[in-house]
Amino acid sequence: MGYGDEIMATGIAKIEKIKFPHKQIVIGNFKQKIVTQSIVFLNNPNIIMDPKKIDKNKSIHFVNNYPGNRPHIDYSKSIKGKNAWNLDFKPTPGELFFSKDEKDYAKKIFEEANSFCKQNQKYNHKGIIFIETTSVKINDPRMGFKHTNKDWGNQNWTSLIDKLKKDYLILQPLHKHSSNFDGVFSFNCSFREACAVMDLSNIYVGPEGGFGHVAAALKKPAVVIFGGWITPKVTGYDFHENVYVDIEGSPCGVFSYNCEHCKTCMKKITVPMIENLIVNNINKEISFDY
Image 1 (cartoon, rainbow, N blue to C red):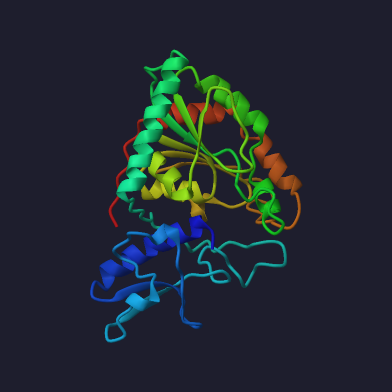
Image 2 (image 1 turned 30 degrees about the vertical axis):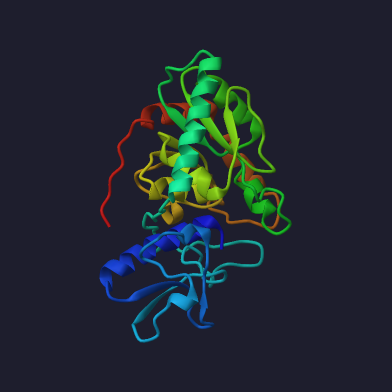
């Protein structure tokens, strides 16, 4: 599973732990008795991911979530190269629990980012924007088309950043396919370290995917670019600004070729549209109860 799938699974685990407080909560494949082990679950008191720590004398509750059994996909209607979506599914915000080292790393990044601001004469910024401009899987042989179809494009990101960088501190975690943007403080990190940095930021802006679920777990406002590939009715959160283009063919779910429908959807999402959503939501307070 991807990190986004696993974060959604932590939301399900939280609900199940509330329902069954005396049961051991395990995420994985019940039929094959496989327990999912993920960095996403580290330090989570609701989830057991080490099979050696499962007490066989106590009740176990399996959250059945694994590749081939993801709750947001309607497998009965999906076809080769194209997902259909389970419109009855709605994600519960997940959970992330950071270690002291991860929190210290995030503080260090912010110290460096503030120095970056001073050097660029904009120390008194209006807020901190955490951006993700493209997926680490954009060139993946199996999943690359999916992320290409969800990509807003470097030209749009450059134009957006040029409009925002005078007033906001913009942070970007780097990976091997990241682009460099003038006026952005970029940093190398692990996925969990990036999440810890987001926890100290004011808003997430980027494509639908893992970091959108991170923002929900951390109770952060977000501007999430869905395009027309998947609908926010399935993987979105009502307290986020979900930018979805509902035209003929949406939500297409195509992951086997470059989709012209998805290109059309992304062209309808303008830079001023995203800029206004950021400015209007950056200081929004998020709260929810399980």
